[in-house]
Length: 258
Image (cartoon, rainbow, N blue to C red; front, top):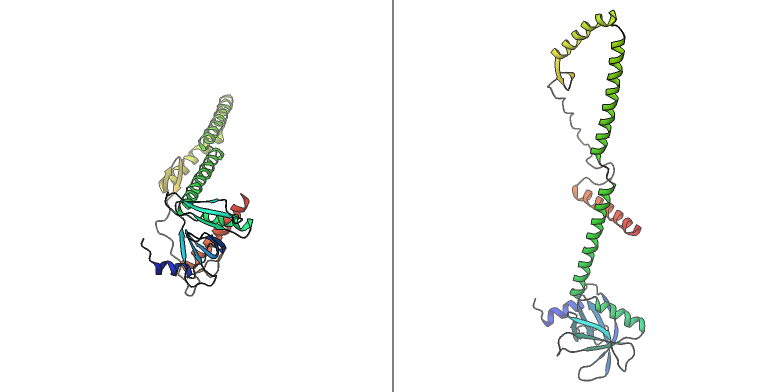
């Protein structure tokens, strides 16, 4: 991307919020004395002005491929911005206090895109570990339904075999009664009527359901399309925003609980 002096000056003084601002002492390149300048950090670009209300910056430092470290200097609370290139200029700066120096060193060290790329990779790695741990925990806590079904089938088979054996023993020991003989033809007739009037599936006779579908109720005019749970969600965009807020609240609660 090509940048000219006008576009850089516009970016330095536009309404976009800066990452950090404040006064620092800057050592000159030709004049080795320290001069008090107003610094504005936006992204990976460090602008400096002669005064706080300056219209245009007098210089800019692109914070890529550099390191920020403490240095020995006549000024107290001094630090330097060094680049990897051997012939690159070393910018020596100084703050008013120890707290201000530590704040500026931390902000400048985190301003490059290389640092942001490392942060994103680390967050992706942590997210993958959390997802793997959650998936492993869900698989361990999830019961095995096949094992339960097998146990239930074995229990039902044992109970049915015991009941059948007891019934066979009772039937063999006792003689058949006249009421059972008389009621048998009646049950056969009822079963024949059920089979003829309907369908039989899995040993159970079912009556034929009417093929005619129930009528659709008429739509009431003037009825509200809004959700009873979330009011004012008649259109899809409002409903999307409503659920988005709920998801953000749940995510904030989850982060607090961690």
